[in-house]
Every structure is written in C-alpha cells, then in structure tokens.
Image (cartoon, rainbow, N blue to C red; front, side, top):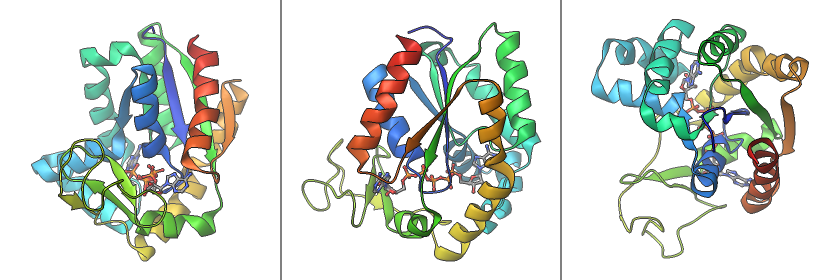
Length: 222
Ligand code: AP5
C-alpha cells in the first residue's frame, strides 16, 4: 500500500468511526489517526493545546481548527503514516478539509475515499453511553453490542482494566451530535463534489459494516 492511501471516515459520535478504523488498520496495515485520541492525549499530558481543548471537549463543541491542524500535521509527519492513514474524526469543518487538501497536495498525495457512516441520531446516545475501552490497549467495547468473550478480560491484550470517556454522557452526546450536523455534515457534499465520497449504512452489525468498508478500501487501494 502506498502513502497515497488516505481514507477519511465521516460520521457523528457513535457512528463507529473508531471501531471500524481499528479493524481497517488490522486488515489493511493502515494507520488509524484519530484527532479525538490525539486531543485526549494532549489533555492528559497537560500541554497548552490540551489545556485549551479540555473545556471545549467537555461541553461537546469542536476544538479550534488552529489547534487541531497543528496536532494533525505533527502526527502526519511521523514515518509510520507512509503506510497510509485512516483519518478518524478529521476533518470536521470546511476549514480543516481545505487545509487537508493543501497538506496532501504539498506532499503529492490525494484523498482515496471519504466514507460517510450513515446512522440514525436516536440510536447514537445509547451507543455512546454504553461504550467503554480497554485501559491498556484501547480496544473498544459496548455494554450491549460488543462485550469481551470472557467477562472483564480484554480480548486483545488480556487486561482487566477498562475505562469510560468523560464526554460520554447523554447531555454532551447531544451537543456533539448538534456540532456534527452543523459543522461536519456539510463535508459530505464537499467530498461528493470532489468525486471521492462513498456512503455506508452503519446501522447494521459491526462485521457487516466492516465488510462494506473493506470492499471500498480494496477498490481504492487495490
Ligand atoms: P472523537 O473522539 O472523534 O469522538 P466522536 O466523533 O464524538 O466519535 P466517537 O468516538 O464518540 O464515536 P465513533 O464514531 O468513533 O464510535 P465508536 O466506534 O467508538 O472526538 C471527541 C471530541 O474531540 C469532539 O467532541 C471534539 O470536541 C474534539 N475533536 C476531535 N476531533 C476534532 C476535530 N477534527 N476538530 C475539532 N474538534 C475535534 O462506537 C461507539 C460505540 O458503539 C462503541 O461502544 C462500539 O462498540 C459500538 N458500535 C460501533 N459500531 C456499532 C454497530 N455497527 N452496531 C452496534 N454498536 C456499534
């Protein structure tokens, strides 16, 4: 796979971007690049960017383009991204999308596919509020939809420690959904105009959604 394999996963909170990005990472050897994860790491590290982002994230709003683009560019400059990247949760505004176009053009790259995970808003609050992850390896689980094979033990690494995100409560999820529809959903039209948009029904079971995504990625990278 070449460096030109740049894939974008679009979708509201709970659509399955992280779940599917991790599966594509394993299947295709791509690198998942989640701006949400990068921002949470900056918050945990107490950097200036993290301090500025924390309150916005807690309220369910979008962090400024300036901060997000700075951390995204730093991450894209790391050598492992040469394997190709799955952008999970980026871009989220038209400003970010335009900046990504410029960044890729400067590197002689282009977007392989922007894939919209289409879901019903009403189901997303349940999906997000039931979510938890392995505290050691980050594997994602859900109280109802995806439990470890052995209760309390991570399938991937065997850890017995799990955690839940601070912004995964009904009030903040509602604000995050609003931010998605107002600022991010217009990117569906943006990428349609560039003839790189694909749409996947992401209300089905995780493995079925994964199969639909794998077909798109195979077409784009094959
Ligand atoms: P971020 O971390 O990106 O969160 P998000 O977009 O709200 O998305 P989520 O992580 O909640 O959901 P997901 O689609 O990954 O779903 P998942 O696979 O976990 O962003 C957090 C915050 O950071 C933002 O609010 C913002 O403040 C800031 N931020 C981040 N990027 C930014 C940017 N570019 N610009 C500005 N600000 C930015 O699945 C959810 C659950 O459902 C899991 O438990 C999973 O097991 C389950 N599940 C998944 N698929 C299915 C299925 N098909 N059926 C049943 N259950 C399923």
